[in-house]
Length: 384
Image (cartoon, rainbow, N blue to C red; front, side, top):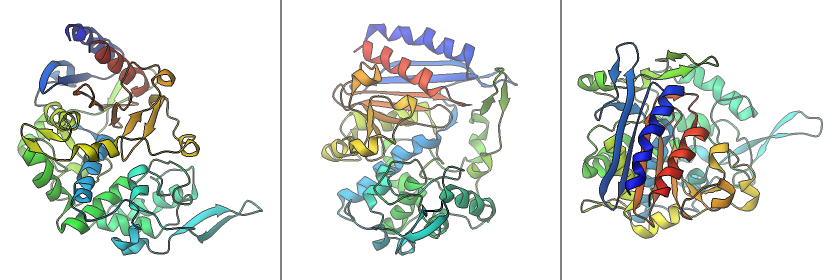
């Protein structure tokens, strides 16, 4: 994989036109074959990006959450087609917002229950806060007050979301939202411990991920990379508005976007998936379960809603994008290459056929994912 040296000038170009700093690790057949750190973790102090830099991985948390839930699936604790209310009773008798004949918003009973598979697939009808659906507006309104409570945790989030009518009938469209946070609540119920405890005991400690957590310890705070907003003119403006959730004492543990990690830690997690669920003699998940996870589960009808620029050529499995049409994506990936990305530009790519994985870290919004990530993917695959 000699041509991986092409990645270093690419990373430098990213920093010249985007984030303050970035880092990339590529692993192949159990070995780190490329690693580089470019730019700054903090512009004001000129602190460089380093191997021990800690990043907000936002939605890259989702892959960890789905792996954790599938570990319980492998233990026979649930079936994918089970109704959600069997485990979280607050979701019994779900309701849905719909538009009436005079364009008025009505609330009607849902045609069926949310299934656990709907949570994995983002087809549950649950949303984030926003303004596209009435559900999003109601979620924004409720979270504005309730999320400020010192008792706010993933079980309370679950009960709040269950009390708001869904945006659409379960199973009828793909829509990004709180589905994987509700998987965190499911894990708490099935495991009988907090979501964070389960992740630490079952994934982080066994894989040696010593710097991955929901709450940053006091002695590690100086290692947290600064997050920057990039305005239209280009200057980077530091953003600390969302950092309260990472402080010890807060209870929320967001499976959809709450984890912190390092390049090394997340690379070990990613390569465990590339290696069929095992890393350094520690098995986290079965190979056949990873095959199920990374199979496209979206029908042609549902794929119409799955239309982000960064996802061209991909379908969606149980919490991960999965390559189904390299020609449509302009990609030199293998069929079945999979992964996900985070709000500030973090990115995971896994190719189990090649035993290849890559993790990219940066901290900038907007994240330029449709510019950066396909270029990284094409250079890495070109070196195989």
